Image (tube, rainbow over all chains, first blue to last red; front, top):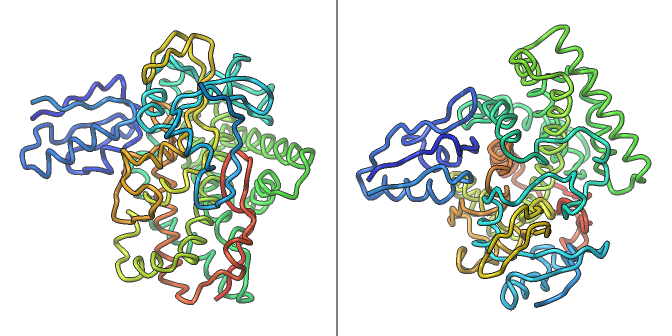
Length: 65
Length: 388
C-alpha cells in the first residue's frame, strides 16, 4: 500500500494529521501535507490511512495497492 | 419534486427541523424556496453535500446575484476569503493556513488553558450563578483570537464589548451595524500599527510576508468574526447538553480521555453553521442523478447530512466513542473551516476544565427554557444560566 498526495489540491486542513500524526505532518509555511510514512503496513496503519483519505477535504490523498 | 420553504427553526433544540429530516428520506435532492422567493436545490444527504462542497464547479463567489447566500452586513466590502474561488482562494488560504496547522496550534495549548482557567477563576470568585455565555463562552474564543492577531491587552475590553454587541440578540440592526463599523475601523487601525511596529503575531507576519494592508484588514476581520460566535455557541451548547444529559457528563468525569471524541461528536450533533454551504453552479453538474444547471443555486444542508444514518448509525444518539471525523460541521472541500483545529482545541480544553474544576455545575433554568438562537446564521444559545 502506498499513500499518494496531490499537493496542488491540498487545502491545509490538517485532518490527516489528526487521524495519524505519525504518518502525516503539515508544511509550516502553507499548511500543505507532508507524508511522513507513505507505506502503511499493519492493518491499523492501513486503516488510519484509509480514514485520512476519507476525511481529506481537498481530496488530496489516495491509497494505491 | 418537492417545493418547500426552508426554515432553520429547530423546535426541538437537539434536532434539525423535522421537515429537513423528512426531505432526506423522501426527496434527498429537492427544489426549495428561500424566504425571499428565490428557488434553489437543497441537498440533504452526506454523500451529496460532500460531493457538492468538494466540486469546484460550484462557486463561492457571492458577488454574483444568483448566489444563494445572504450576508446582510457584508455588502460593499472587499471580497472575503470565504467568497473566493480558486486560484485566488488557494493562494490566499495557503498564506494564512500555515498559522493554523495542527502543530502550530498545539503550541497554543498552554496559553489557551491559562485563558480558560482565568475565566473560570473569575467566575468562581463571584456569585454562584452566572450566564455562562458572558462568563466563559464568549470571552475564551475572543481572548484567544485577540492574542493570535496581536490585539494589545488594553484593547480587549473594547473588543469584547463590540463583538458582543455584534452578536447579541437584543441589539437592533442599527446597533449591530455600528458595532460592525467600530470593529472594522479597529482592525484597520490595528493593521496600521502592525505596519509601523510589527510584533510576533499573525497580522505582523502576514504583512512582513508581503500581504497588502487592505487584505490584512479583510483577513483579520474574518478571523475575528468567524472564530468567535461559532466557538462560543459550541461551548454553550456542549455545556448545556452535558448538564441536561448527565450520563454524558459522568462519562467525561470517569474518562477525561473521551473529551476529544466528545468534541467531535458534539460538533456533528449540533452542526451549528446553518447556511454556510451555499454555492452557485458554474456549469451543468450531475449530483445523485439530478442535473443541476449552470446558474442555479445549491444549498448543502450539513445539519441533516450529519444525521445521515447511512454514514452515522443511530445518528440521533450522542456517542462520544463514535470518533466520526467525517462529519461536515466544518464544511468540506477547499473552504473547509480554516480555524477548525483551533475550535477543536478550545472546545476540548474548555470542556475538560469545566468538568474537572466545577463538579457541582448545574443548569439554573430548565433546559427547555434556554433561549436558543433560531433563524440565524449560527445555531446556539443567547444566554445560559448556570449555578454551582
